[in-house]
Amino acid sequence: MEGILLFNDFKVGSYRGDYSVIFTPWKTQLKKELSEGDVVIIDANIIKLYPSVMDCLSDNKTIAINPNETSKTYSEIGNTIEEVITSGFSKNNRLIAIGGGITQDVTSFAASILYRGVDWLFFPTNLATQADSCIGSKTSVNLGSYKNQLGGFHPPRKIVIDFEFCNSLEPIDICAGLGEMMHYFLVDGEINPSSFIHIIEDAKVNKKTLASLVVKSLLIKKSMIEVDEFDTGPRNVFNYGHTFGHAIEAATDYEVPHGIAVAYGMDLANILSVKAGLIDMTLRNKIRPMLRTISKSKDLPLIDMVKYFEAMSRDKKNIGSETKVILTRGLGEMFKTTLVMDQETKHLISDFFQSKLYSVNL
Image (tube, rainbow, N blue to C red; front, side):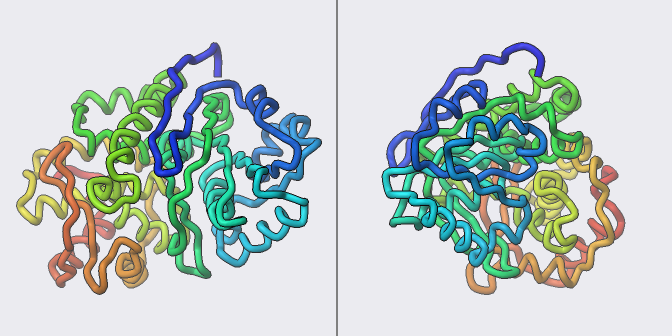
């Protein structure tokens, strides 16, 4: 990224005490943070993209992981923890995560259960982690084929954000990050979709605009998690688009990146909100182009609706047989409710994919 982007550091309140989010060059900060005995868990792709990182890590045990769903399974994380313990790691040492969401999940979960909890630091390297998951405390890992069914809350002690990592992102990765950010902006309700679409388009090519959206997204999320860190009430609205998006990921074997799946999911949530009489189609049509400028970066393959509805039924937010989703009464007015999965609703959801309703105003 050309030039230096300056943003104010901030702290996030947590049950474990405040933790810091700082904006600074990653390599300089990494050298400052590493102590003898700390173990680094790093995305193998980061080593390929930034080979000089190994110069910083020569004195510390380093575990490179492949950023795939297998790496964050409970059994595989057990192997990673065993490797950490074998290195001589003690309770006063720290785990250092460098990578995206998979690396975060592996490290945060390992830190939460190792010696009943150890400290960890995070250097997020993609937009989704920088703008969203790096704060909020959640740990989520897979059990076999069941995605994100195990976890808890164990925030890092410090998060180091360097927008240099945006320089190595592909356009689809930028759109995936923007898709994740969009659910915060819509839940916050302080944007005009008709004009904000131009900001999104600019953010795809202008790293300064992109970075400012990352900070905006984090501050919106910070305000909510400090009220409901354990996601038992108000914070539920941040699942807007996610039940439908997670099912897209599962039904396509994760061919569709998470943030893009969420962009599709938000439009589906809006159409279902229209069906329920909560909003007018005019509002859905006003929001849709803004979401579509993100989701069009990855066209959907043919969706197996049997797999899709099975994935929805397994969503971890469900209660018993009730399918829990976030619908909306308007910008900034999202709420959690039970979706009645009758034939009419299933037909509408199927039509959303088969007739590509996401690509047109209705």
